[in-house]
Image (cartoon, rainbow, N blue to C red):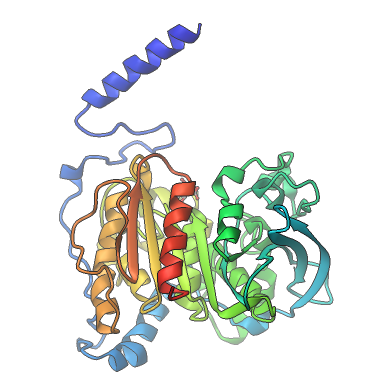
Length: 431
Ligand code: GCU
């Protein structure tokens, strides 16, 4: 039996290797392009070209004019308007704390109420602090996909509750430690960083409910007051990013954490979120996007892997309704994703791809980094540090903008974390 499986797998591998370009996977909608020769030509918007036709030539013009203009466009046409912090009434409650990893770290649980004194919506923060830190630690805030208990085997990690759990990932029985391979917790702590995670569906459940659950109700009065058009109201990625900013509000009050050194990190849809969170909230010291793909780091104008049309079919609630008007022709978007990266400048940003994760378009992710490079350089940093070609697998490159394509599939591995920690050491902690 075993041998039969092995043979058929080998045969399949041989057939796939003989194809002129990688085959589509089962999830891919018909027509998904994986052929580089069929990407077509497109012109990327010039990040320096302002709406009034003038061009940015100085850091001041970028900061005072163009950055705000681009942020407004991304809010209007793609993610929706980011509500202000005062839509929340924050209160925190300490739940428990213990030492873990042979005394090397403290594991703490805190619940953050977002509409106190109401008990919902709320976020359970799982906080790891390095035990022997010399002063406040740099930190990584990284939301998780399946619930806090899935990042570690620890039996005391609280299982989150979400509205209508049958429709969210938490509706499935939570398997403690099921995703721990994606969380190099001990390594992160050994390197002196604090790690904070939160289950993303506690912020906003990941299905279309017409913006009625999660944190969305907290936005409605503010959106009405500011006459935000329905077409441009903050969608789910904005809700997740807003929740991460509220977590940051809280983290900045902790004496164990350096408030100026909190990086935001996310994988896949949460990589899109990590980029948008850092673009909107300049308190994030850095952003790390792992395999974020279309709607994240990858260029939208490149017809390769996931497209705005497939996102519209499968996950329209992540974006505001106005985004759907660009499905027919993404070239009409007044920006592309290199300008999302540019919104994070001059703060350090890491964009990571995986060689087999073609759905996320590794090359499009690299080209986005390259497209943001002029803005990083105008602002006095080294950007991609002179790199102009996508590097071979497992070869991290760049400076303030860093990039790698790891061998393998859509995932977060120890290799990825190793690179992120090296990067944060250099660009956030200045070691
Ligand atoms: C789907 C979706 C991607 C997303 C990914 C994920 O594949 O099409 O855009 O990044 O899910 O978040 O896991």
